[in-house]
Amino acid sequence: MRQPIQAKVGDRVPERVIGPVTQTDIVRFAGAGGDFNPLHHDPEFARSSGFSGVISMGQMQAGILAGWLSDWVGVEHLREYEVRFAVPVFLGDVLHLSGEVVEITTRDGVSTACIALGVDRAGETVVKASAQAVVTAA
Image (tube, rainbow, N blue to C red):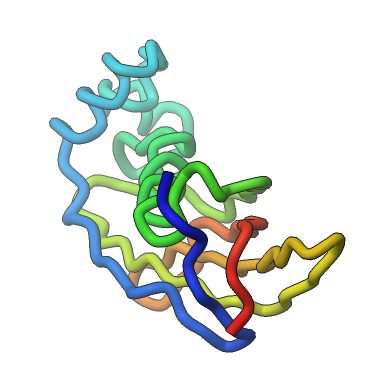
């Protein structure tokens, strides 16, 4: 097992850029997760539902964000993960993942970081999230 990362308030998760999102990305995620809602693969259905085209499933962005965070803190140290979807993600969107340690608390000798996370496209937030992870306080 990896040791917890050393962190302090203000530390930023190394940023990552994903995309542009393709239909193949969405179909692969649908196959892995079993979400075959036509909003994610049928352009006519998506338009008839009020969207300009197919949309990615929110869980795809949540999964990308969780994997990226786990790469940094180690999945074994992740204690809590909460996601809010703000707007849909469309084909061609380029996603920018960001995160920052906003608080560290220590209880019974265990330090836990509260990490504010986000996914943006062209300056617009598409996902807001937060996580709690065990760290070594710097």
